[in-house]
Each structure stands twice: as C-alpha cells, then as structure tokens.
Length: 182
Image (cartoon, rainbow, N blue to C red):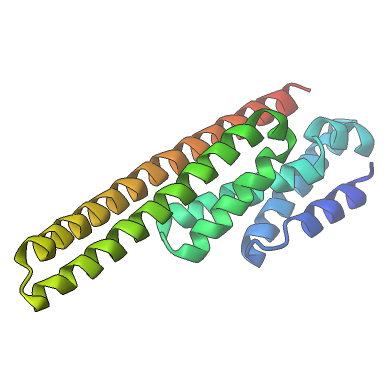
C-alpha cells in the first residue's frame, strides 16, 4: 500500500470526527511516512508497520467518541461513544456478542420494570383523591421504588459503559503495542 492510499483510506474512515482531529491524525501519519522514508524504508513497509488504516480509523473514532462523552455527557455523545465502541469490537463479536445481548436484554427489562412500577404507583396514588389512604400511600411507595430502581439501573448502566470503555482502551493499547513492534 502506498502512502497516498493509506492516508486516503484513513481520512475517509475518520469521517464523523472533527476536521481538526482528522487533520491532526493525518499529519501524524504523514510524519511517520516521512521518518520512515528518510530511514530508507519503502512506503509499503511503512504502511504495513503502521497497520490496517481501516482498523486504525475505527479505533480512533471510538476513542474520540469516548473522550467527547467523558467531557460532555450528552445523549448524542453517549450514542456516538456507544456506536464507536460497538464498531471497535465488531471484530471481537464472537466473544462479546452474547455478553452484549444479555446486557441489552437486562437493560430493556429493567427499563420496562421501572416504567411499570412508576405507572402503577401513579395509578394507585390516584386513590388518594378518592380518600383511599392505604392504596394511595402504597402507590406512593411503589412510585418511590420505581424511581429508586431506575436510579440503580442508570448507575449500573454507567458501570457497564465504563467497563466497555476500559475494554476498548485496553484493546486500543494492545493493538498499538503490536503495531509498533512490527
């Protein structure tokens, strides 16, 4: 693979990142090529040592999404980080797919339970207006349990996301060490 092919593939695959980030990454890889050429290596040798540009871009986009989510926790940044991580681990799907499916199923079930508890609590609280104090207070407690369970679900969800981020960073670090050793 030539320098031009490598850099063009990398640039195309970094779409979605800010133009400044893409330019910085491309400049770094241009420097790798310039240093390698100055050392007497061919473009193909340098490209092979750097690794697959598609894989590199996938890892960089995942890392950029995670950094955005860590600095500004918004739903869109969360989605970006999540999709970036999912793209990064696509290669490892044989190992992680069953685990992620179970986590997703548990998360959906927890969300349904939270909404059901809160809705049932609200319906039961309407009994307060009909002077049925016991049912109304039961509804209030059910609503409280629903909110508490929802908060617990969010906290556990964040722990799972942090574990996935840790895995992705470990994956990224191991890949970088392997490519630098090549």
